[in-house]
Length: 467
Image (cartoon, rainbow, N blue to C red; front, side, top):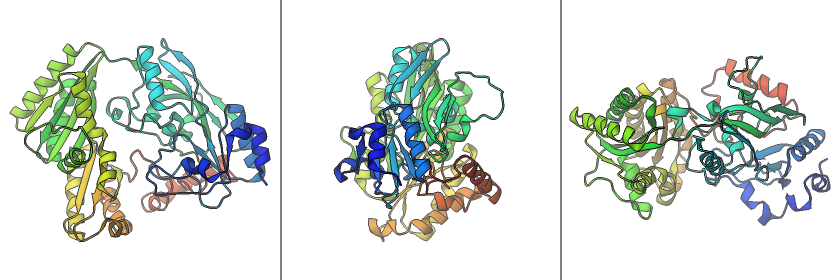
């Protein structure tokens, strides 16, 4: 049986937390939907300590919950209520081990905060493009474990696309050193991809080799008013046709989203006098100066208005204006939290199917719950929609949350009809573990179970999550 003394012997007495006040920040998820009661929270300060902890847990058959910044949106990073699981928080593993500008790589430990990685890359005149709202507190180990997406997936890909190598402590306590900064390595299975997106169920990522890119010199961005999601997709096609890979971000917000941000977030300014059903935020970047992308963006927007695709557009004329326009999108989560409780969905369909998906799903929900209020926003350029639903007038907030199962059926069945995914970038965690069984084939589920059993035969890695 695991003991507190055995944990203290590995990480030191000051890094084994058991008092209720000390463990509180580590046992409730960001959305405050799940709260657990761990045996203890431990904070190792080295990879050797992580190895020793996992070996101890394997010997005592103790469940391990790997944790970074605890910003999970699906309950993947918190323990259950049994009092038997060990939370292994990796925040002390926060060194940047190497930055190689010539190879365009950076080797970082799992506890590095995403914003710190971005800043280190920028200081070396490079870009690490993973960017999301929680970047000031989320940590790269968690980002990789959930295959984080964010606002620049359209150009650079998800976290999975930004990793060249990993260092992982396996459930046996063995250390796999796969920290190779190679873009070509055809020597068998690509093992690192097993652990990216596995939500800590196959091992603990302790370090990674990340891809860097040339730092953009030019940036142009605009906020555009449109009549429909279909028009937003027409604008996307026009932008990609004109600007190609310079289209770095392409975000969608419905009118309900913008109104919610303007109402609840201090200092936000409405970009247009008029209101439109849909809005797009478009950003172009280039290694050349602003003069290379600014006129290009203005030209394509003029054509979009002239062709009747867009109704109005405002182009940022300064960095402060660009930040103000981005804030309208980035404050969506805070605005929703202030506005009240709603049912949240993180889904993806093919980009070409987005407009039909929104139209069909909105209609199904309104038929079942007249007056329901969809709050749709997301990374439309890669088909990822945050399709959230506020309660109709006939429901209180609390009563609406009790409708989660029937609303799940409507939304997720609609996603399935469009051959989409019920989790685009937030992961499965606790919240979608059973839901996934409805939409994954037996072949897929059995393959995943076989991998889990092979790597983690004791089932100690993040039990009760994903599978």
